[in-house]
Length: 281
Image (cartoon, rainbow, N blue to C red):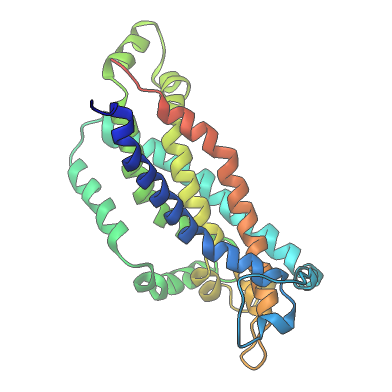
């Protein structure tokens, strides 16, 4: 008598689920340790025998973070930079991906290869040239010096990703829209845009996270005007070489993480539902 097929596969399924839970625990552990450090008293944080729990949680670290007068300004600056990068990069990438997919023109392959090359260049290698560029344009100590570089670095990835979504839309759908009297602009915004929206959402998540967590550009381009600083720079307020406030650092990092999680929660349903639908010819 042989066992049912479901019983044969069950051990493999349990092993896969256990592996997935283990990977999730490993990924989530740094977040847990960050939150734990934010609620630990100073004595437990500085203890030579760290424990993965606390018996006396405290919100003093969060209180010190929100008592910083410039923290609210840093938050607004980060929000302005991140949302500007998301909006601009999504719009430009959508138009560029449509152009390189739907139109035939000279050097189209060269342009696509240039996108790949731009994606491969390390950001650190371009920081100094971009510093002089921002200086010559008079953008140092402004939010524009943070917005423009992030748009430039987000576009290659966004264009390549959206190119696949645009290519998946059958050309017969475009021809049918033209036969029904739709203009090119109407097809672009009312038909093509909703179909590639999952790709736009995915690239927006990438652009938002990259701009929100940026420290290199904020440290390099915002030199003297602290009113233009962003949230990552707020961590320096609590980090002092002689006496670092690790509780404040962890609390500020936790506050920085919340908007990213909220942004992903807001867009993930649209992303999943869009990816679940297939475009059929």
